[in-house]
Image 1 (tube, rainbow, N blue to C red):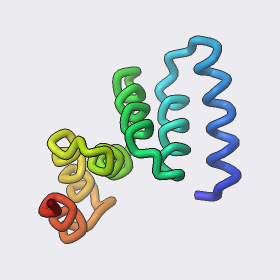
Image 2: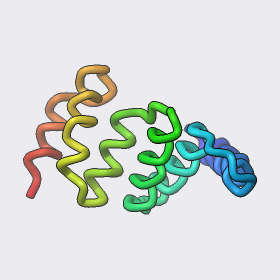
Image 3: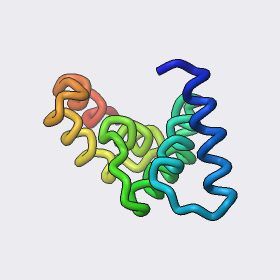
Length: 100
């Protein structure tokens, strides 16, 4: 994904959120922006918000953000789902889940 397209999505999402829209796509776009900048707690919270708003954030992106934010118990099912949908390899997920 190109940096400029993520920034444009983030800008549109911010406008929707500032208007008070509980738009799952807007929350997910903002989460993608924070994940790009490795602001993991913020990204994880925004992916959670997207899911609560009826969205279906990508399991790998959501799981990775949760894992990096230290919320590993919540991340594990999403990371396993990423293996099932083939967006992550089993080896990658096993290494993450086994990490201290």
